[in-house]
Length: 271
Image 1 (spheres, rainbow, N blue to C red):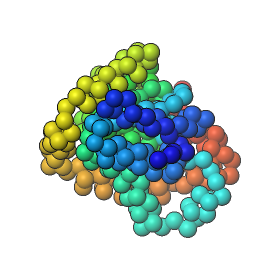
Image 2 (cartoon, rainbow, N blue to C red; image 1 turned 180 degrees about the horizontal axis):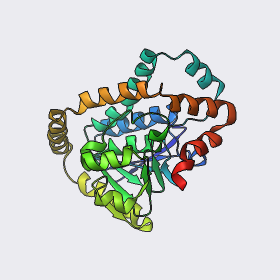
Image 3 (cartoon, rainbow, N blue to C red; image 1 turned 120 degrees about the vertical axis):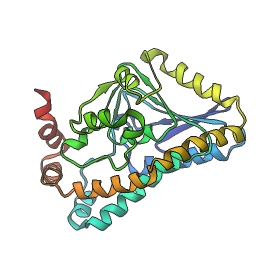
Image 4 (cartoon, helix red, strand yellow; image 1 turned 60 degrees about the vertical axis):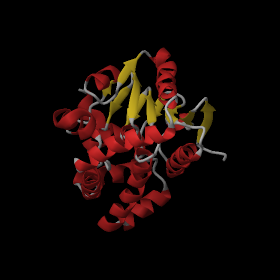
């Protein structure tokens, strides 16, 4: 299968998926989201692949969802209802749940910026290996909504989830590992080898055993209410899109450009 927005390669028993929109900091367009799932499912179906590694090309793992203003987006926003917005969120969350529920282990290899939707993708992988100098956070909480998925609580606990989501601040990869967001932080020049080494180590185990052991951990998280929380999170994200700040961000983005909207949103936090 050929891909437009990513590169797929096999390294031993590992499938490495490289997001390939470096000019957009690997912003998660609808097309890229579809291809990530398609590539992961291809790996899952291949009897010779036992693990999946996801990384980004260029300066970022992913700077988030692609929110570049377009005429189509403006028209959609003008006719959006709370129900259609929830439907849209459910479709998007389904992509990441497909990664979470993949039968073989997935590792996110994070460098540069991993922001907003980039964290949604990373947190739905089984493990995250991060560069020490990476920048991680969910800045849209400042004026756009809430995380449409809510895996933060399961990786960093309630206090750090609140610390990140009530400020939108960015933290370093080193800090992310300290608080449990990532399993390990390494210098950027060691990231490729470290992440691939971990994936390769897992790939030595048979697929049936990998699936069984991953399944048990995932079911434990279901007992903690993960799926219900995901639904609650996306519904509250749709509600939050109607907040005055979110509406103003959308207006400014369409009329004055995304750069102006981001400056308005993040300016107070640069002091």
